[in-house]
Amino acid sequence: MARTVRKKSFAAPVRVLFLSAEGLMGGAERSLYELLCALPEDRVAAHACVPPEGPLARLFALAEVPVHPVPLRRFRRTLHPFLLAGQVRALYQASRILVEIVRVYGIQILHANTDSSALVAWEVSRETGIPMLWHCRDLRPLGPLARILAARSAHAIAISRAVAEHLRQQGLASRKIKTVLNGIDLARCHAPSERDAIRRRTRAYLGVPEDVPLLIDVGGWVPWKRHELFLEALAAVREKHPRARGLLVGSDLFSQNPSYARLLEARAAALKLDDEALLVLQQRDDVPDLLAASDLLVAPSDREPFGRVLAEAGASGLPVVATDSGGKREIIKDGQTGYLTKPGDAQALARGCVKLLDDPAKLAKFGEKARARIEKHFDIRRTAEEVAELYERIAAGGGK
Picture (cartoon, rainbow, N blue to C red):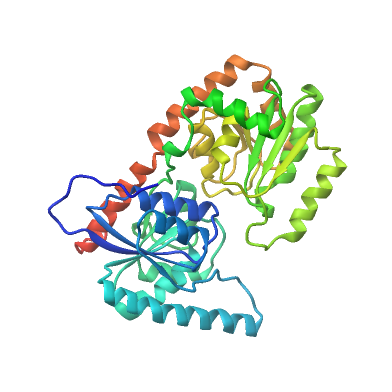
């Protein structure tokens, strides 16, 4: 994906330094990469600071974005004094390097992609006096840290209205919060004219016949994603559609939840979901292909900040059956592009899936409406335009 090039403007582009404390490609990192590539070069001169030798650094380099390999790290809550001291030391060391980068390249704005990178941006902003933006992509409670980070932030960018409300509940003033709905790169998802060919090809290498109902669940193996509900819903769907299969895509990417991975394995075994019923794939780069091959996305998570795979599914013409939690209702129109069900209820998820599998015409109609909705509201170019305008206001001294 190349940077967006548009007609040159008369003003000099705003020099922005993007910070990511994670170099692997989770949802937050994919969103940052697509945002940065969509920002117009004539308005934003982007630099990126990411951990060295990771997929994110390599993608930025391929997009011809100047990359400064800085040993940033994810910060974890801990009361262990040695671990805490090590994290503080790492923050200080990274901030020393970043302060020099800011001065050498004349950076005007720091853009922190997550809470962890916002901690480093806070220190660099304090030392250099340049404004920072804190991109909020989570619904986890931060306590006093939320107000500390907001104190130096020109804005906290909320990726959904659910996140914006969460920040208000954390004590942030509304004037500090800027809601910019997350967007996706629509070109990465398959257009309707391509989908049949992609579906046949992908199902062939997965070993799934073309007429078998295929349900997919995509996401990291963390407890709040509630993948066990997908397994339970799949078992219930198979009572009505015995040939239906499930596709579980993801992994414990950051190696923080080994016990949850074991729980999922045990639950699949208890439900007798063998290889004919369930395919388990690890972290993948071909999620758009897998979505095109599927009939429904099932999204069972609790307190989902946004859910970019819901948008990717819609862009692929795929209806979604999801628990009504977090920001998902901002993407899904209940009864039009999918179904929203009671959180934590696997049987309700199964009923939503069966309702659509029993009515192929409705399944297709929901998919068409889903694609139209995503194209209208969740194009990354719209996100990039709003963010670029925000940069320009901050650089001009407006800040709002």
